[in-house]
Length: 289
Image: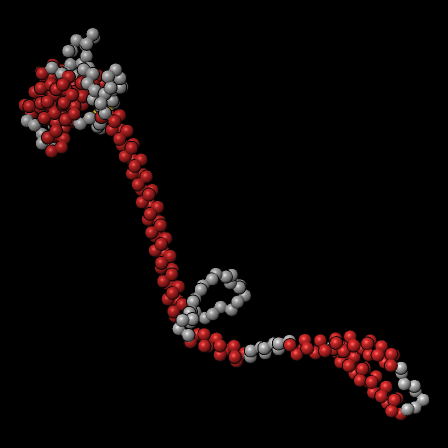
């Protein structure tokens, strides 16, 4: 725009100078007509360029003015007031806490919230601990059951044919080893009964009977066998007189050991005198059967 204005001013000055010279009619000579036409020919492009610049400036749309902060605030308030456009959303984000930031004084609500959070965390910890303890106890119970089943099968399980297990040294808590018993069990039991040791006399008779059944008659009595199981084995494996004598002995032993009811002296001494006759130790060649 500046170049166009300068060129228009130059044209006006040039024309005015030429007119002044013509009017004064001074010493300056008037240019010839062909030269004057040539001069206008050279300035025509400048005039056209100036007109084009002025036209472009007139056609250029003016930019709207920037809104003021008050206008922006009013527009935002109008949008918020619109029920179709108003929406409030709260988002929480985690960020690192500055170590040097001043701590806010704790209020009563903050202390209550902190105490509640601590209580919830403690309850969650207790629940997790109890859950772990239940799993551990369940595993221990399963292991105990498996071990108990293995022991039960080993002690009371069925005897496989062709497999001879070593005889037990104790049945329940009674020692049935032959070396722990006297050679004449009946006479020794009778002496104990006459000295007033009735329970010891009956215990010796029952221990001796179990030892003879296991070592002399090869009954598959186990370490955990009960009186009823031993009686059932004797009734299956022994002849009738021996099975009947062992049944009489068990019938006297059970009330005495579990009920503290001692038999009559005549009945107890009768068992002592008949012991070796029915449950004698194994003779060479197995002649007891």
